[in-house]
Each structure stands twice: as structure tokens, then as C-alpha cells.
Length: 373
Ligand SMILES: Cc1ncc(COP(=O)(O)O)c(C=O)c1O
Picture 1 (spheres, protein in one colour):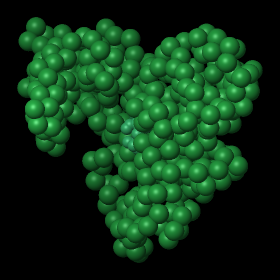
Picture 2 (cartoon, protein in one colour):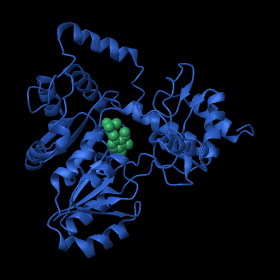
Picture 3 (tube, rainbow, N blue to C red):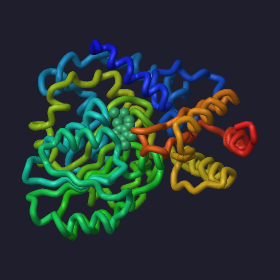
Picture 4 (tube, rainbow, N blue to C red):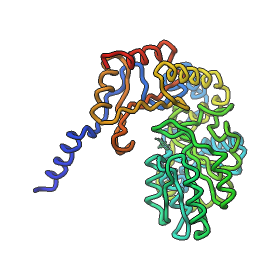
């Protein structure tokens, strides 16, 4: 059999199992979108674009950085954004990367070697898993949100390694449940480990100033690394890590996903800073999102801690059928399947955002109750 024949067969197998993926057409404007990560509903806010356009008329932001940040790709816009982030999180250092994927795949391999250990929640995002795979360390996954299991691993193993890193998301991307960060902080202190928290789904949404779950749970200063991504609630592109000066310097010197890639264009960095400056003021959007979540949960008779609400259906076919039925009724939902979630836990991931109204939630939950779904 020729080589491409085997690829073709493998794709056919995926198709039969309901696991085939494709790139979709853009979401039509007249549909209710419940699967983007635009949690504050900023993506289509024309007032924001108008206000930023005024700034553009006086500033001349370049559209490319043309090289890595370690060559000539750095810019005043990077410096301004990092200075702002440092102040916001009261940390020594902030580093902006091209994406959350670059951070998660790059930093852990840079900071660790064969004398170290990484312990990560079983449900961490694929980008963190790729970071684990790229590391030359041992790594172990603890059962999702099971801190007794985490402690058992720490007790058995921590003393055998020179540095131990505990890695978690704050709000988990596919299950929408929350880490108990103070509990993990207590363990990291007890076993002298470092704590790495990915706030991709909590930035903008949780905490009084929208800094994330570590702000809400009052433990920013106890996290050694906090990662935030700009492509979700911040309606931009890129990501940041806040940490101490030594770690930041180590990251700059050793992280391949920072060193060997072209830096972000100044125009994007300026837009990110423009939005980030507004985030602390968006308490009304955060409160609205919380109301929508409560309404959804109550009407659909579900449990959910956050704006990410998994509606677990089991098989791929059932998730595809639900998504198609929702789409036919004007709700843009997509099936989430293995390997993004465990086998037989295919689902619709309802990802609510502040651009929705209560009437939208009523429409969606009515459909979930109806016999036509
Ligand atoms: C938890 C988590 N971390 C990191 C990322 C990657 O961030 P980015 O989209 O900026 O690459 C994602 C999703 O995309 C995510 O869900």
C-alpha cells in the first residue's frame, strides 16, 4: 500500500468513529454563538474599535516585528504591556509570548532537567501536555482536582528531586470546574515545590479586577508562575507569564518558544494593552456573565461552577447530533470529542459570554428541554 493510502484509510476510520475534524465556515452573524472563548463579549464591540482607531490616528504602530524579540523584534509596545502587567499583578517580572501554546510548551521544558519533577492535574490543556512531553524530566499526572492524590505523590517523590513543579489550570477548559488554589499553595509550601497556574479561562472573568481565580482566591503572591492568554476574554492574541526576576531571566535565556520565533507585531500589543487597561473596570460584564451562568444552570438543571458548562452526551455520534440540532435552531454549538476530552465523554461545551442576553439563555435551555433535540 502506498504511503498516502494509509493516511487516507486512517482518515476514513476517524470519519467512521465520529472523530473527524474540519475547519468550519465563520459563524453567521444571526446565530447565537456558545462556543467561542470571547467571554466578555468584546470581539464584536464596535465602540472599542472606534476608540482604538482614534489612538491609531496619532500613533503609528507597525504591523510586524520582523524578528525574534531577542534580535530586533522588541518594541516599546512590549515594554509598555509588560510594565502594565507587572503593576497589575504586583510581581517582579512579566513576559509576553506569542501565545499560551508557546508559553506552556516552552517554559516547563526550559526550567527543568532530569533532576526535576513535574506533577500536573490529569485534565491540563494539550499545550501543557506538550510541554511535559518536551521536558527531559519525569512527570506524573494526579487525578483531576484530587489533592489527596497530589499530596501522596509529593510525599512519595518530592524529596528525590531537586525541583518540583505543580501545574494546574485555574478554570479547566473543557469541564469548567475550578482548582482550589489555596489548597495547592498549602501543599507547595509543605513540600517546597513551585506552583504554575494557567489562568487562560479565568483571566478577565474572575476576581474583582478580572485578574483570574488566583485573585479571587487571594493567592496571587503564592503562585510562582501565572499564565494568562490574550486570545480569549481579552479579544486579542498572545499570552503572558508573571513570575520573579530570576525565573524571568532564566526563561529568556532558555525558552526555545520565545527565542526562536518572530515577536508579536506592535499593533497587536497596543490593542492588548488598550483592552487590558479596561479589564479591571468590567465588573458589570463579569456580574452579567455570572447571572447568565446561574440562569443556565438553574433552567438546564445542571451543576456548573463557571461560565464553561459541559453538557456531557457520551458518544461522538450523540454529541454531533446535538450540535447539529442546536445549529439548525440558530445556536452555534460544536461537539467536543476525544482526544480533547476522555473517550465516551463527548459533549457540547457551552461557553457563555457577556454578549449574550437572558433571552438567549432561555432560548437555548428551552431547546435542551424540547423533544426535538
Ligand atoms: C488552558 C489553556 N491554556 C493555553 C491555551 C493556549 O492559548 P493560546 O490560544 O493563546 O495559544 C488554551 C487554549 O487555547 C487553553 O485552553
